[in-house]
Image 1 (tube, rainbow, N blue to C red):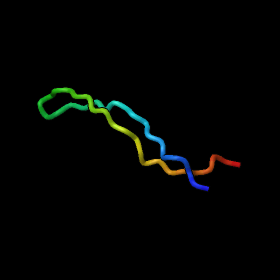
Image 2: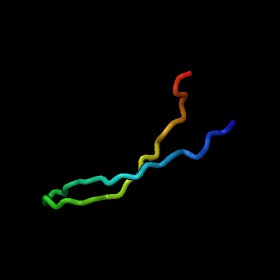
Image 3: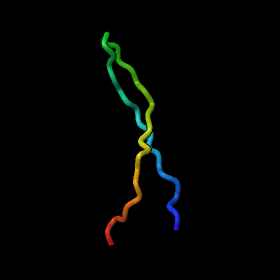
Image 4: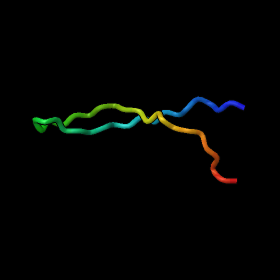
Length: 39
């Protein structure tokens, strides 16, 4: 049995540069591993 496609979760990374200017960067969490949830 093969696992379905690995999920991706998007989020906004908020950060400040060296001059104090704030930025928003769209990022994705992608490094998931399939594991059993008990049972």
